Amino acid sequence: MAKTPATHALKTSCEMCPLRDLPHFREFTPDELNFVSHFKRGELAIDAGATILVEGSHSAHLYTVLSGWGFRYKTLEDGRRQILNYVMAGDLVGLQGTIMGEMQHSVEALSPVTLCVFERDKLMTLYNTHPSLAFDLTWIAAREERILDEHLLSVGRRTALERAAYLLAYLYQRATVLKLFSTKDFLPITQQHIADTLGLSIVHTNKTLKKLAQRGLIRWQERGCEILNGEGLSELAGWEGLGETRRPFI
Image 1 (spheres, rainbow, N blue to C red):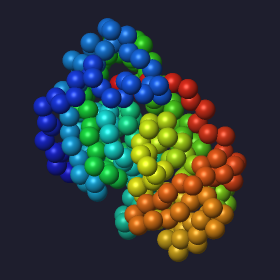
Image 2 (cartoon, rainbow, N blue to C red; image 1 turned 90 degrees about the vertical axis):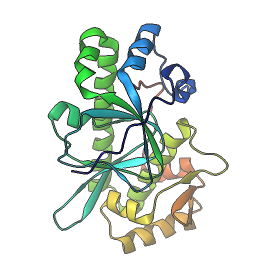
Image 3 (cartoon, one colour; image 1 turned 120 degrees about the vertical axis):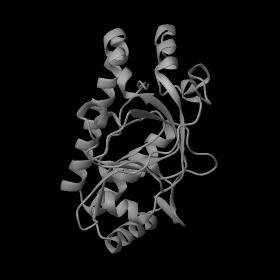
């Protein structure tokens, strides 16, 4: 089991949380905000490329991503990796391990990541005293299932070109509503990440991305992809988008 980095003292108060300013997230009631403020135990800073949680591990904590990008994945005995999904601001990390006792997948930081840390032992208090927050956790778990369904459909039935277009459109839409882009719509992923998500060889992935670039949909750069036409990617993939208005977070 990987060693968990030390938790830093509370740095960002829940009252001043930058995620609360985003229209993508629902607002807490005063009572909910007070509970979450006491539920949070501190923050954890993770370097890019570092492992946050390891498959099979037990953790006394669960986390909410405050900033940065990461991904969930599983590996076979020979080292082959399947990326399951990507995590961004507002996403829960470690809920599976909290409910089932141990992690069934690993989580790695794609960029520098800051996590809000919560004690697993106090999760039942949330369920017992704050049914609205308990519903939020259920909503988050159901949303993750929905996204994985779409990913499975993509890997199983879309062509390689449609798969790549879907993945990039999905990441682009998520990053857009979270206001993660500054001057350029840049996704910090490598071609290897895309290959491991889509179940393609790196050679096939490279050829597929070149086709998207030739259509003027993306521009590939060193260690990342600039999105030039997010709507065009969605249209090519036949994907209608997440269709979310406001979503909860803890």
